Image (cartoon, rainbow, N blue to C red):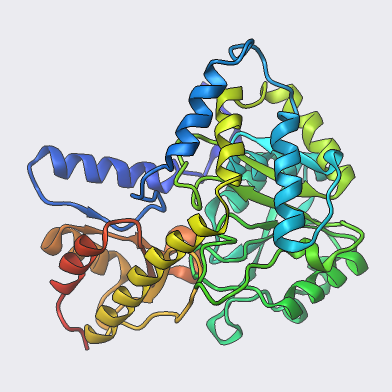
Length: 383
């Protein structure tokens, strides 16, 4: 059978394979502590559940939703951006997504033609690279290095690459490294995008998962003309990974094109889920404070244990990931296998995020404090 040749060289999503490994060990009666995937263990707030139920009780809840999302949810996102970032959005600058992952994929044909160049970060969330290939574009990796705090070094992107690029993905706060963008960086990349006529998309899924004393920022604060696009997600901050709801905001023309693509490929998100998202945005600062405090405790704990075990890591303060250097004497594959077989711990090998991740692995802080403490404390001390 003939198949799409773009699928050659693309495997199934890595975390699907990790699911298989985890379930197989559990079926064998073996202990598993999953510190791999970014799927929070925290509970969904009751008001979010109430929003879902209330949505189910609304007349016409089972009908097709608006293709661009419920007006009520769009208005709540507009309020969030105004209150949190002092950014004023219009309704036509907002679209509701079936999770930001879907939007990240669909923004590519909204901007690019087949054969166009897309700049993607490495190490980086795999979807940027893979979705670019699936849409027939050429993903060109932009290296993120620790000596530059994993920020894109705009001066080191070859001019012949920049001149061919139509679209650029960035991701701050960053997965997998936990790096955060500075105001100066956002100002510079917005200027870069305008000068080079490139649409920059910031994946801000972890925007508010930061230390309590750090103020979250949006790239749109530094782009009064709103030439960029920012993706937001309810998955991480509100523990709603299974709900599949997110949004894109910013560049009016890109949002218009994204709606055009989506209206031909999907029929929008189930309305009760959108009502749940409305209630999530109404939770406010007290909810955010408690969530930040919980992840801060876990972050401090893991860093302390890693130091005791002589495992080096990037000292970040955002997202719920820790980016670690593989100990000497091991390949990352060997080390991850040892963690699994000897300690029952699953972590994510760094090469999932590109070739620059080969000597690294990622720990997700998505298990309860005591489970993280007991599992990681059992590790050997490395050289």
